[in-house]
Image (cartoon, rainbow, N blue to C red):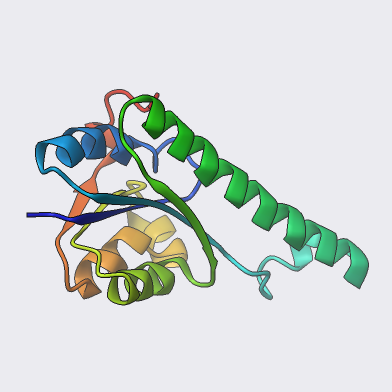
Length: 156
């Protein structure tokens, strides 16, 4: 039924809650292709004040480190999955998380997205938005959303 599963992660423990569920679905559905994806968010007007008066060279180094950290993170998750018998690809892209996830599923024929919500509500959800909500609302493929309460064992 599912040939390609996308697991978007953001580096948080809450996001990794989806891995427990994916580990169950992938072998049961004989999934051939698994992708662990992290979207690196570019610097924006909102993040610049937090960086202070950094010069262009310092900003470039910070940006390169962010990309390197993301690549290392998805590689570590991929390696952990491999130890558990699940072969996966580690992918990083740059952009707006929900837009990049939706773009990835279109370009790469993804059949299922397995992702966690962060459980935000009220004002924090209004200000920070919900990547999971946007993806589930606009995805052409099924999206399995794992709520924080559904996270029983994030140590994959």
